[in-house]
Image (cartoon, rainbow, N blue to C red; front, top):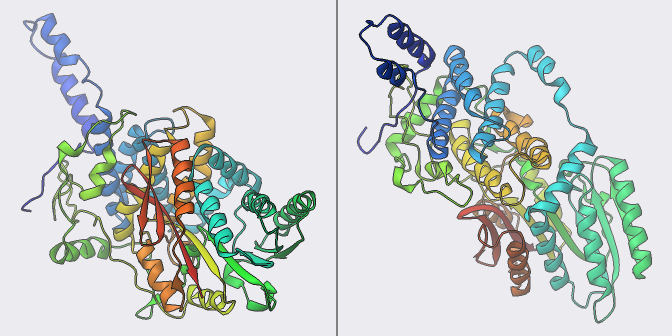
Length: 510
């Protein structure tokens, strides 16, 4: 294929080849010198971090294609090689590969529901474990704090002079939202004109989480002498009805959603079909890639010189994901001679179009009917809501950046880092890679896609204030002045790790 560079790739039969070479050596003529023998048997030098990272990317793509094509024999060979390179305590590319490998294995075993349940039934995490992992993430990275801080400042800006404020929290994430609202109570208590009468409606299907949250907020409000009411709604956001929220005339309404709206996209239909529902993946997976390679740019080779070393010594195998992947040719082979029948995974999948007859449309219309003065939305800034061949590369690029960022605050063998990666990001990766249909909840979309959805629901954009941006920049500087960056996008804010967008925060009004 013109313009494609074929990268070195290892054959699934590397072990047998190595064994044969050793056998030949053992039967070599006696005239062979000791030096020659030592040279022949000397192990090759270990690969550099960049070389290993490229190898992992190559194998993950080959494995994904084999899994999607139901080629279990070669999927097993690729998984075996990946298992030897991936590591829970290695560099970011090794760690992220571990969870993508697990997701591909889970996708295979889902074809046998009994086997899948038997293998994964003991891996379920308790709510307390997930809450603890989110607390660690809150402490060591800016991701959750960025959402809380920007949302609170947007609410304070919008509610200046209001005497009765009603905040609707669309999803209490593991109980950690209480930290956001404790900070908001503090901010309202120091308002020059005095605090408003504050009512917080929290949505979560677990009543015990809501009860604990309500107790903590009520105690804080009493200490701060703020008139306060807590209204728990024990349902999922998808099951919300307007009368559950109890919005009253005369209230100034604010709505917040922290990385939750994307979970409402699972039943969205486009052209009469559920979006991204490519089932278990068949040979049509490879065909779709070949057809897209004919009509779309983005199937371009990465340049090896782009892989430059960073402070962490792992810069950056994932750069190969930013422009494509050079290890697979169109309709090519790997070095073992396996017919691949695939092209490079697309770098920039098509932006999602707002579908019809969906939960997200109904919920946005419901929220618009509340006439909120402000609605703040924080979402992952990547597109993981297409078919597998559209979302695999963006997901690999996105999560390798997250794992890279965690290295800036947590040591390589930190048990806390492993906990966060396993219980939060590892679970998201597995859902993106292994699941389809209504089971796939991690359907992240970019800010431009959310903009279309909100405009179709008759919301208008509300620019975040300069104060919000300044506070966000201070937060990022505290965590990693050289790593995290803030990008302004037409009144919205985007948190980046290096040059990779991670989270977007946008504000809307009815």
